[in-house]
Amino acid sequence: MNMFTKILAITVTAMSVAAISTVTADEQKSPEEAAIDYRQAGFSMIKHHFGPMGAMVKGEKEFNAEEFAKNAEAVAALSKFPINGFIPGSDMGETEAKDNIWANMDDFKKKMETFQVEAASLAEIAKGGDMAAIKPQFGKVGESCKACHKEYKKD
Image (cartoon, rainbow, N blue to C red; front, side, top):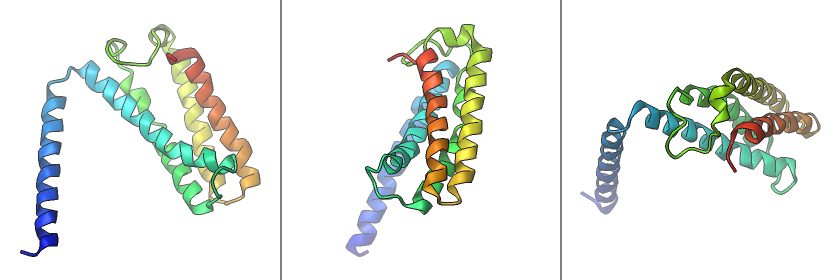
């Protein structure tokens, strides 16, 4: 076995142990704790894809139409998931969600739907690669995020 194969085998083994440990830890969580993890993971992935687009829109990073379109498509797809993590009882624990989400769930869902629509529109516009068309729609997506954060996210 050459050195590369040994390192690969050790890496795969270590990753397998880590994955099994994570699954075991998740099995010990309550459905509410798992829901919090789920929605936080979704929001984290959205942020991961949204950041580079923001840098391009602001001129902090060189515009790459292909990269922008891929990130916009990812945000549009991911925008559909976090709402599933707002189950009854998931207002407790380590969460940045304000208590008023559950009292105003219809409004919260409406804001999340607006985010989904605006993100899907951005993904479509981004396919054209025209920053002049992208910027205003990117702003609409950002505003839909802010609308929800202002009302329903702890600072």
